[in-house]
Length: 266
Figure 1 (tube, helix red, strand yellow):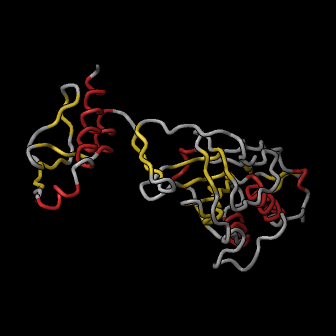
Figure 2 (figure 1 turned 180 degrees about the vertical axis):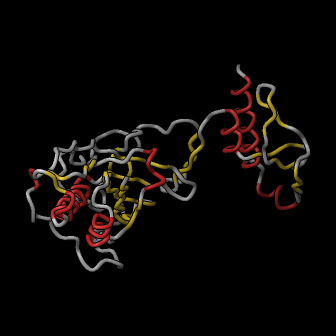
């Protein structure tokens, strides 16, 4: 058995042992926890672990041990479950299909979405969908052309991404919203149409992409709810830029939170 597996089993055993102490015994015996002064090593290399000495044994967080030896520990608040290593991939039956062609997906309570990591995320509350308290009202249909959109270079439609993140207090999910990304794209088209100084021979000098490179994250501006004027003002201030846009639907603990609109102008 490898040292990493040994440490994993030892850590799990210590935590399990703590849970198996009889309740009556715990009630009559008071245990004192003091910070441990011992050093910890993984494969001969020192590691920093927050440990406490209780009744002659060291107790550490299982998550900290996982980070030290290379296994993942996560918690699913919806089922009150702790997962060591990879989470089990649930069956696809009953999951919804997120449109890949840019058409609109309207989430419903009870929708089960298969994330890119195989996790099935259940949507429990959609009262905030298109109903943000800070919005002027529903976002409405996509913009229609006020200039010649055929003059703009063809852009590649990104693939759908569904990102799952595990947290101690409940999981979150981000769905790439291609429909709302197109809203950003068309809003920029119409804004550029009102900037005659950035056209040459009937073609705009700017470019647009419907994805944002992670390297450009420092220049990304994220906002919600949707306000076309924010994007129009950005275009007017930097009409010759290269624009990169994305929209993501954000869920936390099964609850729809908002659609986040991200833009970088370089």
